[in-house]
Length: 120
Image (tube, rainbow, N blue to C red; front, side, top):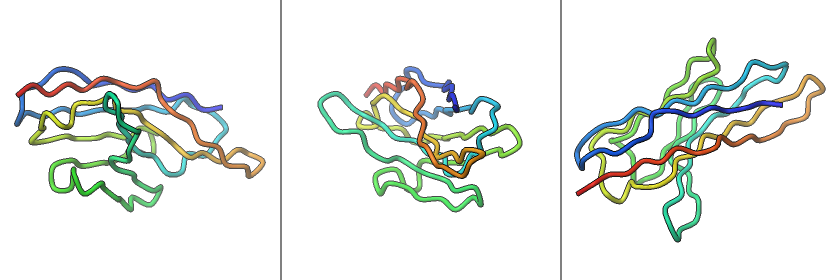
């Protein structure tokens, strides 16, 4: 099992910045891809950014150039630096990881979510 603990959400004015963190619990699982998703009220959950174990990244078009995803493999932690925030970035942000068990099976795990609110 892998547990993900997120932190860093909050209230910020438009144009401001926030950094989200998501730490995976120490386990026998191997952490592979890590990513951030978000869900705004009344909308479906959407991909924000993902990063592979080899640091290949992919971003949603809506955040390209403003958000940066990174990871510290030694700490099994993924970060999301969010700059130039807009009111439409307001959502609950969820961390997700794909992890491989010692038996070679892969599972996905989600964090509990952290609220990001951007005021205009």
